[in-house]
Image (tube, rainbow, N blue to C red; front, side, top):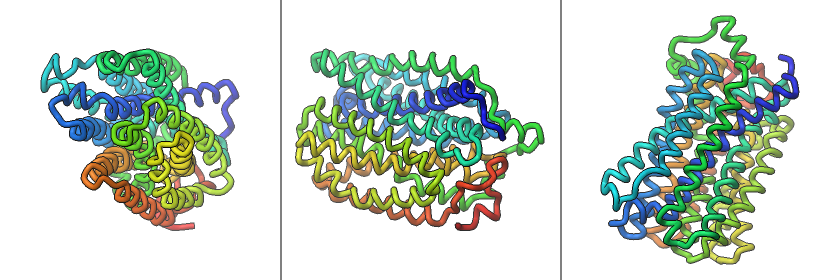
Length: 438
């Protein structure tokens, strides 16, 4: 495959990046709002701890919906193309996020208020389920041989960009609004601002063409009627191993950015501005590290870097909370930087690793389902478990042990997968190769 023209590649990079940036912007502002205000806005009759737990429960609903979106968008993405699904997933995701900012509080609608919040969160999760898989395929299926790690870095930069943007907005609102006004209406502004990102993303995505890899498969009529069934029949082992390998990435990201934020501000009494600035610095480092590790995976291999990332999480699981409990801004920032750097080491190679594991005729389904189910476990369930463990024991040791266990699981599953860096991406590893190891 010949490399696309520079202008076309810039458009492709922007189209793949902006969706994942919006994805993580949406999820981050929701997670931040859930940790800081949703307990008071939507669950005012609960105790402080129970209100945070309930609001984080609505956060988890979005992850539960992700596999549904992955199956739906994966099916049609493998049947009719990547581009159309990218546009559709962006609209579903963006419009539901804007709508969250318009939900009346409990005092206005009563019980219907949190119910409506959960429904919108579920719809948002469906859109998100199809977003990441389509974005990484858009980049990797355009990439020339030997540069899939580099090209996959475009959508993988989304978390850092979305996180920094969302964090800056919350910092600005925290600086200019009194606490009562922020609780009343200020928290809604980041959700409403998502409409601007949605409009830009939609305009860019309707301008791009179908990926050459999928177009070639389309020309050869290589699609299957039900990609999911073909995936489960041909590569079930790879699907399970790849899913379990990347639970750690979601768990670590949301432990640092959501659980630690809630713990630091509500239990440790660290000023919210201090924590947000520390997370902003850490997210900036994460963005640079994601790009570096994605590029290095073209040279060092996806599996080697992913296994090293799992080990690094095991090492950092206890220092993270030790540094957090000091309350010292410098040490707090160091803890966050270390945690998100470990995340970047795993997340950077993942953008190329997951698509490379599956054959082209069900690649959208395979990559999306693995990513989304990993998100359900790591991003939806683990933060709830962590919050409950912290509330019931008053200790972060059990939370660290959860990260250690996930690190060991990830390490073992990654080692059971093959190295994919050099295989023929126009088709995929194939059933025999995918079952082997390198």
